[in-house]
Length: 187
Image 1 (cartoon, helix red, strand yellow):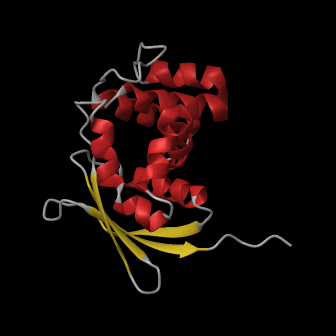
Image 2 (cartoon, helix red, strand yellow; image 1 turned 120 degrees about the horizontal axis):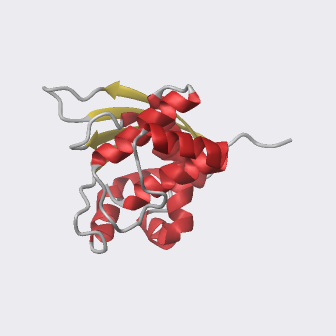
């Protein structure tokens, strides 16, 4: 994975838990880097070790870490210079999700070794979305949950998201049902 993923993991921990906690996580994960270069490639195992160590140090299941990271990723990438390209990907949650593969194709020009997941989305008449997620990397479905929640917030929506199909040897994808809600009106 590119270093910007690990930088975002670092940013999430630093923002919410501080330098001391990040140092403990880095040590437990056996990660020597104090800074990750955004455009440098790192072994996927580095990221998986950081998530496992975060889970251990924080006492939170890895799935919750990944979900929190997914939500954080939306803010992080917008602030890291990808805000404009995100705007071009869509102005609504369904439109953005439908354009994720094209977004990754555009990003790939600057990151030639990028191995992004693939997404497809369909919308039912009631506005419920079905999102299919295909990735060569296993165990990242909770990250998708967080990404969708972060995107929904970006578009002024709330969502309920449930995994309705789990990747297996027979099924090379995870599938999610997304129920969209307008934000609660303030009184």
